[in-house]
Figure 1 (tube, helix red, strand yellow):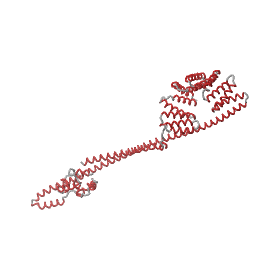
Figure 2: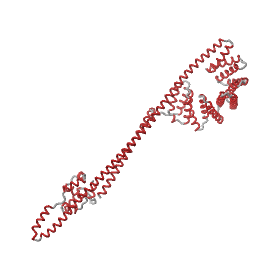
Figure 3: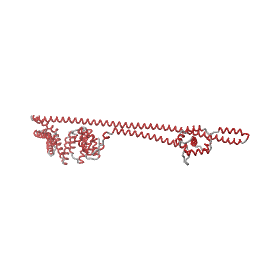
Figure 4: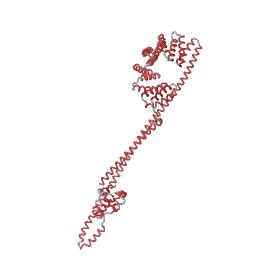
Length: 547
């Protein structure tokens, strides 16, 4: 019974230690993960995200995008700041608003000659448009072609414009003349004037079919220019007059000024120069362009008029237009300087934004590495703690086994001594009985009486002091726990409890102590009452279970 109880106790102690190790490991790992997450949250969450919650409204975003387009030609810095504010919500916007956002960003960057950024946003816009099968993807293709043309990659621009033109024709989109015009310009740059003329003629045919007056005007105007380059002067004048007729039917002042300039230029550069027509058209072009502040045509008209009047010795008129040209140059130079300054500031702001983004990325990478390092370090520490606890557990197990072995040896020693006393007393009892029988014989009576007196005087049970000393060494906590729970127990009660704890019977205890069985039974009954045991409870099992 005692051995089974010891085994069960050892099992529960081992289970408790394993559970404690698991709990410590789990808590340490959890703290490491929480620390890593806290660091990520602390470094990645911007103050605006931590302390301010902004609602996103589609109408507000659309209004801001319109404001950016308005500001891009007058206050590029403010436009960029607004754009960056909207880009902060990029991941929260629906595709429809993202397309508008990317288009606005690309337009802003293109206006500041930041072609790389503009291309990135146009390509992002194009991907979304293709995923939704939007017709506007062909407009984006055209814009991408324009950017490649501006940076001198004409072949790439031609590919995008050609793909865009196919889409325009497929979907029946308006303003196809712009693409025709762009493709024809590329042909002109390569010296393919006949091919350019064919493209302009196709554009004219398509524009007439669609009733697109602007397309018709552009086609006639460009046909006049390319015909002049082909030295088809009569055709050049004919197309230009038709362009003038269409232009004056519209309200576009700049287009009127442009075609008037073209006519003046043609008359001035014909083999048979017509100075009167040249002067008339160029002066009209100058007045219209000055009224609409179309500086390019104003300057170009003035330059030809200066040359014309100098040839005619009209120096006063030549000086007037020279003064206008100089003023135009000054205005253009001032505008160009302002524009360049604006572009430099814009690029500087963008450079700062890039550096900030790079710094944030480095900080994120550092946090990722630090969090990973903390997690790995935590895992290593937990592993070492686990190993240490396991070693301690093994050591404790070994110590417990040694104690159990020592306890078993002590119990064997007590039991052995008890059996020796029992055996001794049995021998003495037998000897006493035999001597008593001999005592009845007169001749040996005196001698036997002396022997019996000596046996009775020297007969005693187990040395109680020695027994208690060994028992306390073996079961150190037994007496303490018993007295703490039952302080009324006497020394005799404790001694009897110790004998019962060793699972000795009443007969064995009688033989060891020299008391009668009746006395032991009475003492045993008294002990049960002090221990408050019920009739069905076994006193030996109860005492064994105490420790």
